[in-house]
Amino acid sequence: MNKEIMCETIRKLDPKVRFVGLINDKGHLIAGGMVEGKDTLEDKKKDEMLYLELALRVKMRQEFDEELGPVRFAMSYRDKVLVMSFPMAREVLLVSAEKDLDFSKFPFSVLKIIKEYS
Image 1 (tube, one colour):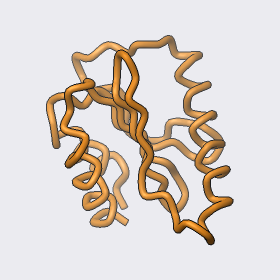
Image 2: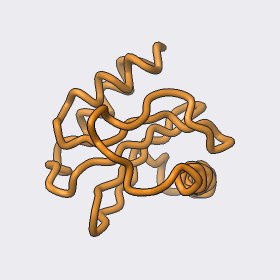
Image 3: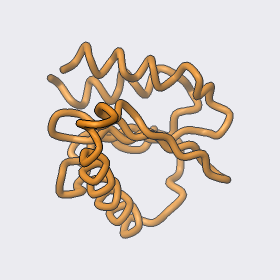
């Protein structure tokens, strides 16, 4: 799987996408990043904290996989941004977008792309 191409393909799904990145289980960004021309809403140190927290949260959710099935994606609707995470085999795909993104369809398009690249 070419991780950078996958991130770029997801970036191109909608102009409201701000960030697409793959985070490893240690909380490090290993592919992707901010969309060119968009500014990050937090500083680099907080980015690293967000990535680590995301990696830990994904691991904790796996505790319920046997009973409820695996998590396909999770979403947070915040005052300034929409944040989605997509657990993958070894990484987590993190996507942030403007709040007016069509979140009833977008995550399912991302899941199709992840499947194609896996």
